[in-house]
Length: 206
Ligand SMILES: CCCCCCCCCCCCCC(=O)SCCNC(=O)CCNC(=O)[C@H](O)C(C)(C)COP(=O)(O)OP(=O)(O)OC[C@H]1O[C@@H](n2cnc3c(N)ncnc32)[C@H](O)[C@@H]1OP(=O)(O)O
Image (cartoon, rainbow, N blue to C red; front, side):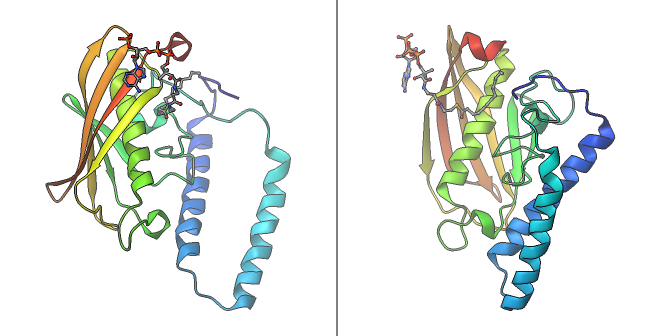
């Protein structure tokens, strides 16, 4: 179930990614759907059919890696099924990670499915991005481990539908501790900032 390698072809990855894209769009559409009962009943029937088609192929082994720290190219593929950043998990918004000098950047726009305060991103979603982004930033040390603490300052509301730039960088690495700092900018303005401590665990370094 938690495999660190996969022999899935590029084509297989593409079709799986496309599936998540459709599901992600359906989730977003469902939040603001205002259709007659008859239309929704028809949609429900078609979705039930899709569930039936998928069921025989649902196994306890994922098609792709659960975790692959040696990924080249797309940094989101370090954890392809991440609930926060996985391109193969429809629950995750289409955030894009990229390394820029000593900072790991996460660019994303959130829609209605991620709303907390009116027209703003839910604080728990923001916390999720920091946790994932900072964990991956910390991996640049060659080590990994769970989050011991994650502190967030919400300075200003984080708007929906606007380009957000999350940044994370290593602040301190000592023995089994990695402290990572982060911030999120909207049009150049810092709206949130954070700090997290990761404790390196042998189990996670396998
Ligand atoms: C198959 C491979 C899998 C790989 C998957 C990776 C994918 C990436 C996924 C990314 C997903 C995103 C990531 C996620 O979502 S990770 C999910 C969220 N995090 C957790 O669930 C972690 C749960 N907690 C624990 O497991 C333990 O409590 C940890 C591991 C954190 C420490 O427990 P442990 O009992 O072992 O260590 P220790 O107690 O000897 O402490 C050691 C040192 O640390 C210091 N300390 C501890 N806590 C704190 C604190 N709060 N503030 C300040 N300091 C703290 C402590 O004082 C000590 O310092 P010192 O005395 O040495 O100086």
